[in-house]
Amino acid sequence: RSRKGMYKIFGGVCTKQHSKIDFQCPLTPRSFLAFAIDDLVASLTICIGALDIGEENWYMYSFDDTVVAKIFELLAGYEEHTIVIWGAFPTHGALPYTDPENPPDTPKEKLAQVILVFGVKRLDRRDGTMYPLILPRRLADITNDDMLSKVGRFLHCCTRSHPRGLPPLAASWDQHPGHMKVNLAYLGVLAASDMANVEGWNRCKTMNLPINIYYFPFKILLFVTEDNITVPMFGASDVGHLLTASSRQLRSP
Image 1 (tube, rainbow, N blue to C red):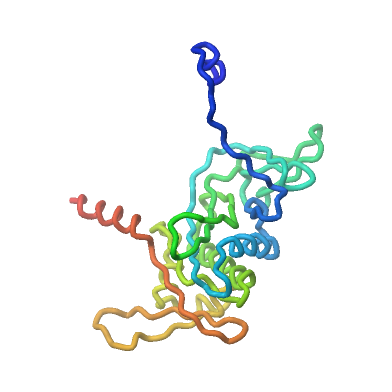
Image 2 (cartoon, rainbow, N blue to C red; image 1 turned 180 degrees about the horizontal axis):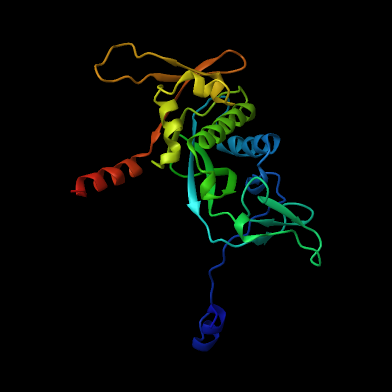
């Protein structure tokens, strides 16, 4: 039986109600439709504005893949017409559903297996994370080069959304093998040729540490804005994932 049916049988009343999202509110980021550059910039502008950081870059971003149930669903309220979501980007990320008698083509092999979620937040708070982009995709699409491209594109859009064109000061991610090149970029050891033709990363350079440390080849990653302002960027696999990986290694024979 449904929950409401059980409440009727036992005489209980469900007082809990989840708040509904007003997708038409101009302050709501359009996470499900922020696939194109201009749409992502618009979504990030809302999110960064809500962080109330002024002209500073005291904000960070994180990204992670989350497994989703493989099913197409309808979402109303985003556009004038209903859209079909949970198909894989780029061809089936958001399909218009305007005629119930003639629905869009939704083959099972185009269903998303995971969603790549980007979040931004202030550096001085643990809460208040905003989600400018939710990108459904297939597992086969997760590669090092693809992740480098997507993260670089996100960085580029962050600078276009910030009042002074500054990138996030910090970033975090987990230890998925597909994040290796992003990890190397933030450690300052990714080859310049790998970044030269990738949007976002092509504005980066590295700087040596002020002291020499044996067996420590890492450098500081710098971002140069369009106004020729150079700022550092810091990032790493977050502490929770590092501790989990360390625990696994300690338990391994």
